[in-house]
Amino acid sequence: MIAKPHICPTQSQYTFETFIVGNSNRLAHAATLAVAEHPGESYNPLFLYGGTGLGKTHLLHALGQHPDVRGKHVLYVSSETFTNDLINAIRNQRRQSFAASIARWTCC
Image 1 (tube, rainbow, N blue to C red):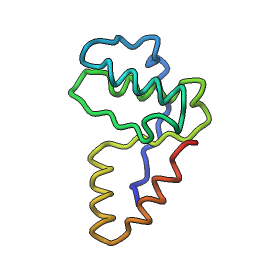
Image 2 (cartoon, rainbow, N blue to C red; image 1 turned 45 degrees about the vertical axis):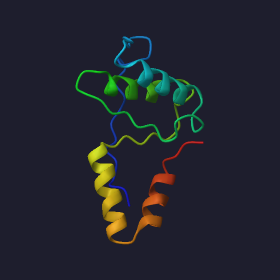
Image 3 (cartoon, helix red, strand yellow; image 1 turned 60 degrees about the vertical axis):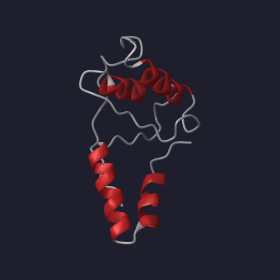
């Protein structure tokens, strides 16, 4: 089972309109916008990885505020939490339970 997600409200200042697109984050921006415009269809699940200050948090908050996503379930977990939960599920032979916990959060 995946750890209980940390629920926090989105930060209203982080929107797609206020995001500055550059060479280092262009793909992440395009992927996140595709998820926002077509929830459950594109990049499902969406994983963002990168260095400090490249806009990961900004994009994820923008995603949560997008009109096509509002009211849907969005799971935000760190890669460390996700990896630890996956390893524990494999180690304890609970892969189906882990998959079911992820599926509860999948938007469609």
